[in-house]
Length: 42
Figure (cartoon, one colour):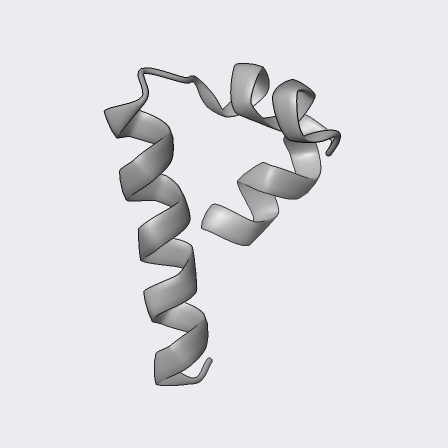
C-alpha cells in the first residue's frame, strides 16, 4: 500500500468517526456496501 493510499484511508476513517457514523451508516449514506467500506478501511 502506498503512503497516499494510507493517508486516504485514515482520512475516511477520521472524518467518518468525527461525524459519528458507523461503517454501515456511512456506507449507506455514500452509496457503498458496508462490506466494501470495511475492506477499504482495513
